[in-house]
Amino acid sequence: MATVTDPARTLSLTVVTGFLGAGKTTLVNALLRDARLADTAVLINEFGSVGIDHHLVEKIDDNVVLLASGCLCCSARGDLARALRDLFMRRLRREIPPFSRVLVETTGLADPAPVLATISGDFFLAERYRIDGVVTVIDATLGEGQLARHVEAVKQAAMADRLLLAKCDLAPRAQIDALRARLDRLNPGAPLREMAHGEVDAGFVFGLAGGSERRGDELACWLAAAEERAAAGLRAAAAAERRRLSPADPAAADRLATAAAAEGDALPLYRSRFEPGQPVHDAAVHTFVLRFAEPFVWPEFSEAIDVLLATCGARILRIKGLVNVVGESRPRVLHCVQHLRYPLTTLPAWPAEAAPVASPAKLAAAAAARAACQDSRLVFIVDGLSREVVAKAFTMFCGGVEALPAAA
Image (cartoon, rainbow, N blue to C red; front, side, top):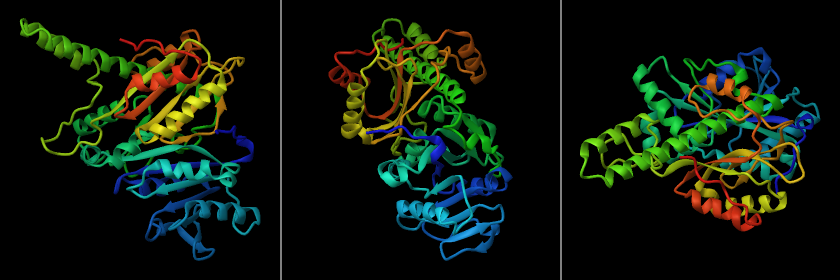
């Protein structure tokens, strides 16, 4: 059962993930040069030597070193939970310099979900650390091929709260734009930044769960972008079906197909742009939105989510949304990754509903201009799981509450 985390009593924890060679350590090096991050502990959840040797100035013991930036760094070669517990206790006993946040760099083949489950599933850790977010680094020069060939790369991108494109100084603009489009289909609404040499503003990486106003604005934009992407997929699928049923007028069918491609290039099942015969691991990964006009009784909603995660968690890469609860004036914020439900948080008020337009700047402006919408809105990024199956779970467990029809 998810619990409410008190930010004032917990340490912020950020997970940096990305496929082999994406540029995670280069990013960490760049972040640690920021004086604002001097009170950061860094865990390298990787076999082998710590890859930031040029920052080392003092060896506290065999596992922990003090960096030139003032940050602590250690390599968690075994049990991540044990390393986090040990760090916290040594901080409490003042055996190491104090820190207020932890950055965990995962191995390039890691699924982020078990790392998050380690924190949320351990009572000691859940009381002392709060998950700030998942930041995924993607190689701009090799990202398209990695997403096509490796399921780990797809999961890392789909579960991200933030996406960072590394090595943009080495990739042609057309290649970067194609990769951005693919990532938008895979994780619509996730903020994305391009970077060279690992340089990025630390404010983009940290503090993702902080600031209620920021969370509300970003959730409104994230939901609107996902709804637009899902609607574009439905329009494209409908156009393809009309083309299939209209063989007598091939010219009209071609016009429909062209229009569908222009409306976001988003089909419910994403197709490979690589040669035939290559494995494509994101072939069944798609996004849909469930919207509910009626408020939920929280225990019923919670049971529906728990059953979904227990039975279909391996196919649910991400859930993000706002929930209207009976008897509550403020929305609850839902975050899930595979089998894991993040600790509950609430917003101080319902955010304005952003209009489904592509530009982030326009989304923010529309969100400020429109009246608040108190429909529950849940965005699902799934692997081979249908909207109908998920919607039925809520109808079964939540007193017959039904999802509104999909946007067309």
